[in-house]
Image 1 (cartoon, one colour):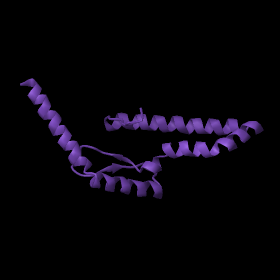
Image 2 (image 1 turned 90 degrees about the vertical axis):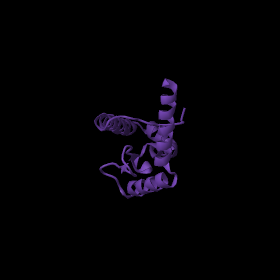
Image 3 (image 1 turned 120 degrees about the horizontal axis):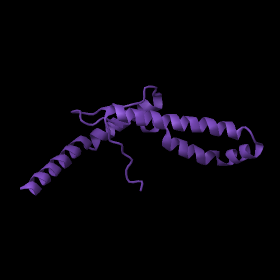
Image 4 (image 1 turned 135 degrees about the vertical axis):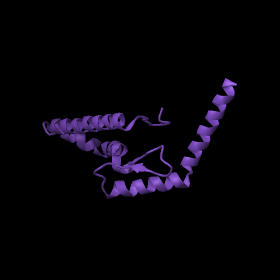
Amino acid sequence: SGKADVIVSDGFTGNIALKTSEGVISNFAHMARLEIMKNIFVKIGFFLMKRHLKKVYKKMDYAEYGGAYLLGVNGVCIVGHGRSNPVAIKNAVRLARDYVKGRVQEKILERLDAYEKALIGAKA
């Protein structure tokens, strides 16, 4: 639906899911590149689609996001890619800034507290 893209898992399982998806995307890109180079008509088609494909790539580029929140710590923690480039670092800092400005941690704690109270009230 486009409302949220969230994975919640322990670190080990999350890392396996992340590495698997990175590998699939990398392998797909490599195979597509090989196919494109085989035929002049495919090259022309690729050239015509290149601008649109760049938009898709940008949506999937880890550097555009900077990292992901690590929840469960008392503060702000952004986990970035091990090979983060300057763009990714800049976006990780922006993400941390937005987390603080948006009072994300406080809002999460407030919602969890309200949820806990609702559960306790439902049991009574």
